[in-house]
Image 1 (cartoon, rainbow over the protein chains, first blue to last red):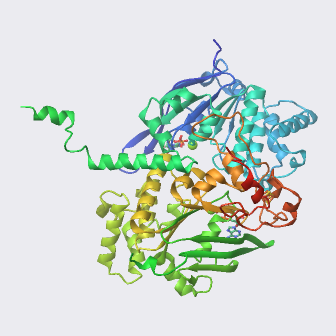
Image 2: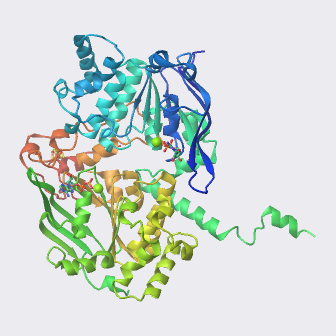
Image 3: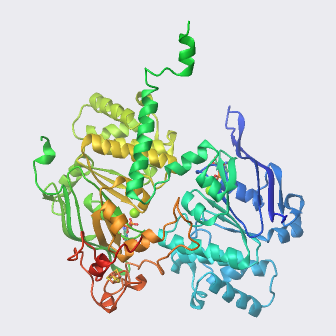
Length: 300
Length: 337
Ligand SMILES: Nc1ncnc2c1ncn2[C@@H]1O[C@H](COP(=O)(O)OP(=O)(O)O)[C@@H](O)[C@H]1O
Ligand SMILES: Nc1ncnc2c1ncn2[C@@H]1O[C@H](COP(=O)(O)OP(=O)(O)O)[C@@H](O)[C@H]1O
Ligand code: SF4
Ligand SMILES: [Mg+2]
Ligand SMILES: [Mg+2]
């Protein structure tokens, strides 16, 4: 058996909320006893509606915020037990890619410096020449041109900025990428380019990826296994064909059924089905067919 | 056959050769390059295209919301050219004859006034008595699926969830009984289950009230279930125009075909790679010569960089496409399938 690269157990994050004058302090359980693991080279999807706790899970795993409970094992180390430089060194093996390529890049920095920043901070590849060579390699890997190096983020389109964000994440040779809605703000033609890039990276570098999204179609395209989240909990976790072909939870079924498909004949059929179900629900069960409870009660 | 709609011939909305330029620091920037588009009586027409293609600007032009821009062409609504009418008349048209729903209801709603107040305002400023305006607003709130409508009418926008706020926006758009509703990405900000409910509601109301709808989206899935006819926009131009099924099963435009191919699907085979359109959409400040799509088009030939193709139905085709190779594409058996 291969050891998982990431193993999350019983992860819980509570946020204090409310607590103004005269109000009782309450807690919001944003992530509630979440467990999952990621194998080397595997892409795990974390899918759910907004507010379901996906980003909070990612931030706890990255230890950008402290979880309330639970353990995170990364590359065999108990990440939450580590402190100081050792924690930072282990954590370096995990890098994040964010949704908004606009706000996550410093507008004043040149692309070259954005990509190299992590190497400078962590003293990897000391020597400007070695760093520059690595930046060029990364640039090519994510599909940008050398003349992009001296430009600033404002001069780039959304897709290009996302490529810069990915190059920056790869600069420290991570074994795991955590991508939080990385294509949600991109147009479909650009989204397809970035999804292909993730697939290439996973295959060429043997990267593991946690791909967070609310969009079920991109998740299906990219992920080997998928965890479906709702209200901070994992509803079900399974491999792609099982989740999309034979979802176990009612909630997963609903999510998949609600995705509009770019095929008008089938989409109209689907809408008819939905409308018929709702009409039936509104009307209640037909009068001549007694429900079991009623049938029982009516018996003398 | 009765009713006001059947009185006049021709489409309800008829946009002809619409161009629109913004004055910016760097000079005039052309956002629309000659858009032609019609919406018939009781017809639902979708505009689809990537960001920056000019979808919202088209909608804003119809509503008279881009006064600072330079506009040429015609926007005929029930026979009247909206580009030629005074501001005063435009204010009447907006809200009363043409209702509108935008992507972000929070920015369209006043945070410090109750929902009921805001919905009924459209009626009150047109002379409906206060109590009557409120009664009709509450009825409509109930119809769009807000429970306890009478009580909820007193609530403020922040007391509604995203999906409920969009239902409130729909009520606001419909309360004055407009003939045309423009919906600009009305479900883009919503979660997928709520999106499905709001789309169903819009569809139901459109049919129930005999509305014409101009529906803007970037999502081909949303489009496929809602629109009867479709216009594909790219770089401020209409690239293809047809009934919805033809777009998905018989497109004769390389840009449309590229969009359809690049979509990840919810069922069927999972391809190892998605087919992509290389490059990115042109910036309106530096439009390419000829066909705006030519730098990214895999079917491009010499003429494409030299001449702008017009939106025409090729001899053997069934609908118009702005492409020099539309005829050739129409001759290919099932390019996509
Ligand atoms: N810093 C915070 N303080 C209080 N509540 C928060 C904080 N961050 C997130 N939440 C809440 O936690 C829940 C989960 O949020 P999030 O993880 O961002 O969900 P998702 O990424 O799935 O949309 C939401 O209800 C959100 O409002
Ligand atoms: N007020 C404005 N001033 C200058 N340019 C604008 C303005 N509004 C829109 N544009 C430009 O017009 C083009 C079309 O925009 P829009 O219609 O919003 O696109 P979309 O198809 O995404 O709705 C874009 O290039 C946009 O930057
Ligand atoms: S006109 Fe030429 S470049 Fe434009 S879409 Fe057609 S084939 Fe492609
Ligand atoms: Mg999130
Ligand atoms: Mg828009």
